Length: 447
Image (cartoon, rainbow, N blue to C red):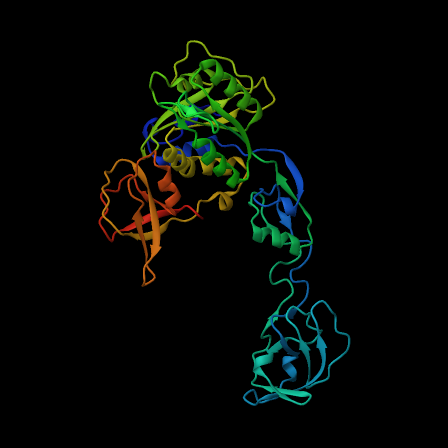
């Protein structure tokens, strides 16, 4: 296991002060190790879970040639020649979905057939109901190309073909695919366990009486909601006061139970931010000043299940610790800033991709939704040197073009603006001012 210092040394131009989003992402990608442990679950319970192995199709899908629509099935070789002349066929029976037709057709005969019904042997083309003219027991129609409106056996999946890949995150479509293969259960990786707690003497839990200088804890609910959307197992450790003994106990409990630990608050260098100093004495931790707005302070590291206070260590130490004397691997720590919007931005930009990797997702399943390219409805001031995430509302103009406008004031404590927004404008580190009408990148929030 590489130490944090070794990971940092492998990144060109790494520096914990004014760290770029791309460098931070690369660091976290090197730190995040997928969980082990496999369990088999029913597909009703598999939504959002991560496949532990490839799923090989036990059958071909569809299992037989079938009709793509309601119509009349016939052998293209029996159609009237020349090809410009109308086709005239006798209807001698019907085929319903789920039933096998028994019999043999003569030249010049056809069968009425329903969508999804298996095509009897020798029949390869279907003419839709609406394309024929009825003439007693016969139909006539303009010639079709051979094989029209036929679904071939195995055109979706062939028996023995990989239907889903290890690391795929199971979507509603994937569940339907599993069911189409007749698979009632699926092997998945165990759920990632993530512990979370808020820090600060100023934080009130719901139900507590308001007091001067205190605020209700919103981060606990936004972060928990974001984690539940990922499908991880959330361990809610509540609010921890700015007391070193309480912080140590919370970290110890989290490290014993969880694969990852998230905290919010206490990442600044102020006198009352005990979380920062406590993290530095209990684990292998690096403290960042990100080149990002909002969300500049962040801590990243590892916490062993058998935490012991280090002596003679600074809060900024990245020295290695020994984790070999305990069966449980160390938990990965994400120390987030305290402002509500900053918490969400840092989670979406940096933490979410790392957690998806820890869940065992492959590159396709862990990739973020592509940024939308839209036009700015207003001028925006921006100084180069940091990546900025601004709350915006993307709307469709009368001509179909997409435009984005800011939700208003962009203070990092204004959580209501995240409720109004349907996207985050992502202004790159090197980017300067934006003029009205300029093209900008937007991260969809409802992807």
